[in-house]
Length: 116
Image (cartoon, rainbow, N blue to C red; front, side, top):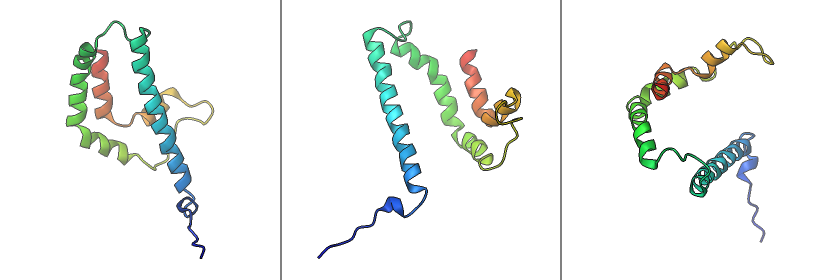
């Protein structure tokens, strides 16, 4: 007796693209992280700062992001799905594109603390 199994990826037109995107992002994160560590161990990257210095430099940002996580998520979700005018497709206006691509003022303010 032959049992027919259906492929769940064929059930939805979005199942495969979503799964493939998750696969590619996961691969990029894994390879990128490994490459950063390997280059550091080989003496090619981030030589001026120790791991402790980096932890101190980013601890304030991490705390700010953790404290404001709900607000940042709300700001990002509020703009999802709505059309945006960036001043053109091939040559967008830089100011309009920056406003659309960075919609969370809370997140932007937190990132601005890194440069100061």
